[in-house]
Image 1: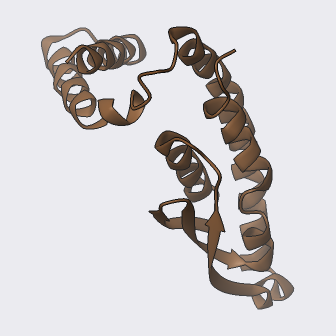
Image 2 (image 1 turned 60 degrees about the vertical axis):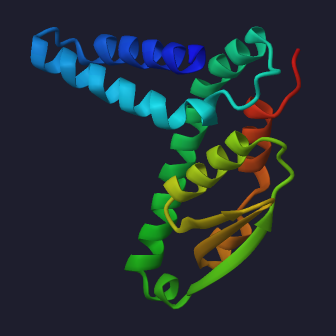
Length: 164
């Protein structure tokens, strides 16, 4: 119960700060949204109860850097997809495929973060998480070859490192 309340409190505070709206309608909307999200996601966020608070703070501090890197990767992938769609040579290289990618993450949250990062990147969609494998749809050989690699290392550095 403490975990759910803590996640609710954080979500509601973020809502208030980011919305900047303090009228009753928006405060109630933020309240209900925060309650709903904390009820369905607290177990995912705090599944590893053995982690120290300092590790969670470190993770939280590394997430913005990862988000900036991910945004850059999304821009690069958009350019690649644009080339595939607009050039005859690129259009000819569209070869959709489903690949099965093994990950060595210990936590479900790291798998979830990688799967969402892959899906956010144009040209790839995570279809399913099956144990230690991700089932991924890729639009071309280049996008299929880029699955895992640097993105997997960065997710591991943020969410899988042991306590410092």
